Amino acid sequence: MGLLDGKVALITGAGGGIGRSHALLFAKEGAKVVVNDLGGARDGTGKGNTMAEKVVEEIKAAGGQAAPNYDDVSERAGADGMVKTAVDSFGKLDIVVNNAGILRDKTMLKMDDAMWDLVVKVHLRGTYLVTQAAAKHMAERNQGGRIINTSSVSGLMGNFGQANYSAAKAGIYGFTRTVSMELAKYKITCNALAPVALTRLTEDLPMLAAMPNAKEILSPDHIAPIALFLASDLAADISGAIVGIQGNQVSVYRMTQTSGVTPKNGNDWSPSELKERWAEISK
Image (cartoon, rainbow, N blue to C red; front, side):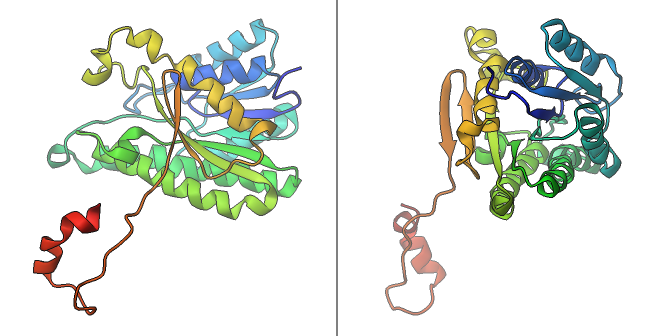
């Protein structure tokens, strides 16, 4: 018996890295998996069928069931097409993992509009489109569901040279929190992962490449068990969580607010008093 027996899962960007690890583990645990991958380069250029098909063949060779999908997450027709692939192939859709992503890193002063627009389109718009298409199907079936998004430490904490990526991933944080509230009445949970892993998207980041034994410590395979947990019935009571994973360490990110301070005169703040009491305000 597997944790996902009888379930159908869609995983975007599953042709490699973290998405591939998700797909292989979900299938091992009994899920029928739609393996989506546009098949392009990490900057979003190009496309092809090989990446998705290779993972499908891996799953089938291990005795599992899977179907490939090559649609673009950032287009409405693509998001609808993924849900259609799941329904046509396996009759329904229970689980979605929004994992697809690209990078076009550049410092903000050197970034052009195309770099900004495409990264935000793939990550944030793509997460919205696939989530909405899947959630409509899940709500109509009235059998609950699981949505797992992918945020990032870059979005939650910031990272030099990734203003476009950080903005998109921070948006996914807020999107996840709101969707978890809106879909609760349908028994559909919505959580997000904030993983640190060594993949083709991150292999040339100095802070990761310089880490001793990075390939083992930051393997994408460490991320998949947490996604599996959130996709299973074990996590039916967890929604709106942003789960950080780095190696075998798991944590939860939360937005925090200081206790707050009022001005001494009881009226409005002056800039000089704000400066004077900033340490107290921010404590």
